[in-house]
Structure formats: structure tokens, C-alpha cells
Amino acid sequence: MRVKLRSTLEESGGSGGRNWGHIMDQIGMFAYSGLAKSEVEALRDNHSIYCTLDGRISMAGVTSGNVNYIADAIYDVVSKT
Image 1 (spheres, one colour):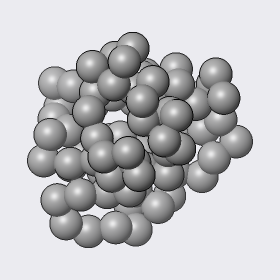
Image 2 (spheres, helix red, strand yellow):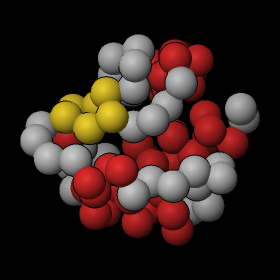
Image 3 (cartoon, rainbow, N blue to C red):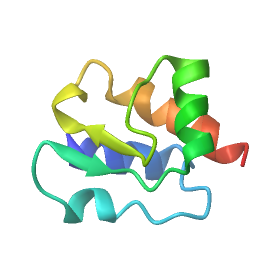
Image 4 (tube, one colour):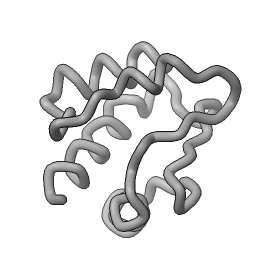
């Protein structure tokens, strides 16, 4: 799912000038997204995606059924900052 999340972010133009390579560099159930607190709050408020305020997401919650939605939501919030 890390590969799919990263590639979907990069393909959708969701880079927002960011490098999403760190998603692939991490291991385990969690990943730091690199999102700011305000972006995390926008994910929660506008897209009902919940993660810690420091941007840590549970990779166990990223599935083939929702990875595109998550990437689109991240794109939405990073493109507005």
C-alpha cells in the first residue's frame, strides 16, 4: 500500500512541491505523512480521514479500496496550503 499511496500522490499531481519518498523509506504499521497540523485538521474536517496531529497515519487502514480517496484528499489539502 505504501507503493500505491506514493505513486497515486505523485501521479495525481499531489506533490505540492513535496517529495513523498519518505513514505517508502519507513517500515511498520505507521508512517509519518509530513503533513502540517493544519493539513491534518483539514483531512479530518473535510474528508473524514483521521490521523495524529503530527501527521502519523496508520498504514493498516490504507487499503486498495480507499488508497485513491486518501491520495485525492491529501492532494486537496496540500494544494490549498
